[in-house]
Image (cartoon, rainbow, N blue to C red; front, side, top):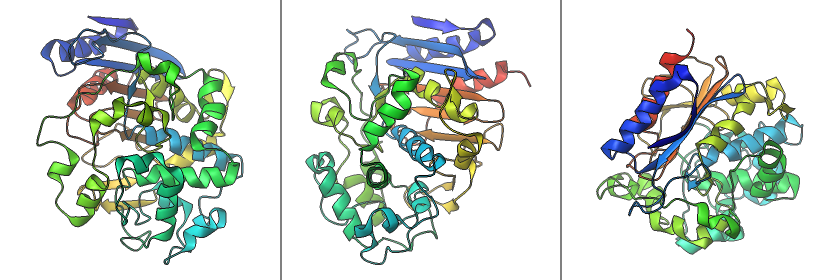
Length: 375
């Protein structure tokens, strides 16, 4: 039922995925882990569609929602490491129009850490507007923040990608998807896409929406939460369209699998080197660990600690080392990067649950990994 490779000491990891598939917790899924730059587990199984007619194959890919944010953050870290981007600089230094409505002092680091006060759009947005880069970014540049930037975290579920992505575009002259592809994915031979070519549509697994009552819009309460979840609303079926797949939605629209997610983040786990290529400095990697803000997230309504584009350990997300960063996507995808142990774990699936921060399927696989690693 589960295909792929796992070193003998990680046999329990394969068993966890087999159990998830056998129980129906997963319909189709992939899990990959690396240690010291070497892939030690790369497994997949199940089906790529709810009707269970298409097997989940080695090269099956899937929309991973907010796990995409890690690729956007990594792209920004790469540009900063090369000296072209200063996280402490005002966003308006690179994007002058952004200074409107009291945002002249908002820093790039505020965008990276969900603390810019721009968790959603104030103007009404439709699904189609997500495919209009100019509209999405222009509206954010014009509007006033929902709260004073830099004083509180509030998950920028969709907007973060446009905000960081526009800074990247202003600095490089290229879209975030293009920079990511040319500077990270292509050099590493990684099968992850921010803007998927139509030629790859046949490999994409179909997402299965969370049960009714579990979606972000249905559990939202505050006005900020409702704005984030309903303007525009989240429609899982939209991820099956060519418009969604082809667009660059850098906070939620990325397509890949556990292998590509884990192997790309070897860069951060392994001091900037992956596949024998140095793309970042050690210092540039550790920038991700620098805490930017902590406290009760105004959108997620839970305690958080945000580094430069990644989550840092909190009691609700206990991790084995303080030098560990992570991020999860709506539905259950997850990546964990441990810079001390030099490991990465990644999970991508098609059966979604109503979570934005990972669930027990991914944590069960991670626990099996941790138990098999040397103390």
